[in-house]
Amino acid sequence: MATGTSSRPARPGRWPHLLRPGTEDDPLVVVRSSTWNYNSIGLWSGDEVLLVDPGLSPAELELTATRACTARQAGAPRQVAHLVLTHAHHDHLRGATAFPGARVWMPRIAARKPADARERILAAGERLSRRVRGEPGPLAWPAVDEEFGERARIRFGADMEVELWFLPGHSNCTSVVWLPAQRTLLSADYLVSPGVPFCRHEASLFEAALERLLALAAELPIERVVPAHGDLLEGEEAVREGLLLDLGVLGAMRACAEGLEPATPAAEAQERVVAAATAFRGRGAGLLSAQDEDNAERVLREVRAGRD
Image 1 (tube, rainbow, N blue to C red):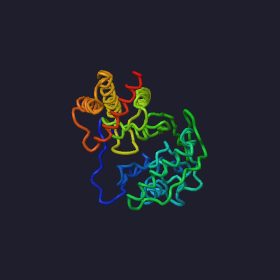
Image 2: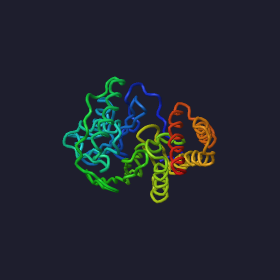
Image 3: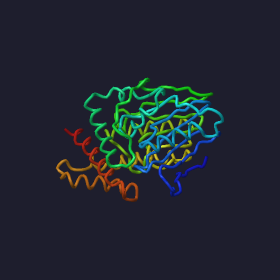
Image 4: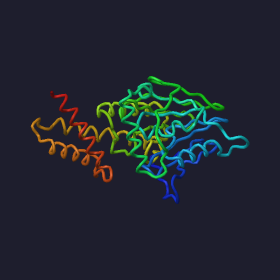
């Protein structure tokens, strides 16, 4: 694999389209959505397939599953044996009911979300369905066969093994998936856009998750990262640089927030914390400026709470 590069696909002629077609040497399928640069993921071994957060629309579900089940396969198609849902955000839950017979895996805390949280998540999914043509119909909470705590291991097909690691930070229920044979980390919503962290929970917990990933990158030969949205990272150095960039941005935000006088007006504090991220990166967040603002709000909230 290349070192220190980001995999950017050519402009496609249609949506969805294949980022990684899957081959005998590298049986990883990645399908890019037209919505939020979402990546649907499949992996095969022998006559079985494992899917991870498999798609937003019927077209994406079909392309991911069909490619993983039939690529270079003579005779009967492979069967989807396992479905991994990395966390309980609605874009990751879509398609969970599309593969009857597959064993569904999910972090325990995600699988056991209380009823009010489930209602909010599914309602957000329904709003997306109304905005995006071709989305599936009414969403349902997945029936989970295998809840896991800190770690789990799945063996399937001829000789494939994957590991599931609970890693809260993006949400309180996020996990990531390690593919040892492919030296690939499926990072869910970490490293979605290095330099603009996608924190949807507590900033300090997100930072702890990045530190854990950095430690794992030092221990393991992580040569490729496939985030749930955005470009793939290729090469150990690119992975390390991406993690350090996200950590640096959050660290710059936190240092700025901690250095502000308690009486600093909220709007000014927000502006200065965002400016600290821009200065660290050497550029603005562009189309992701709303995420910069959201990260700043979360960091400021934590710093203020620590002073109370």
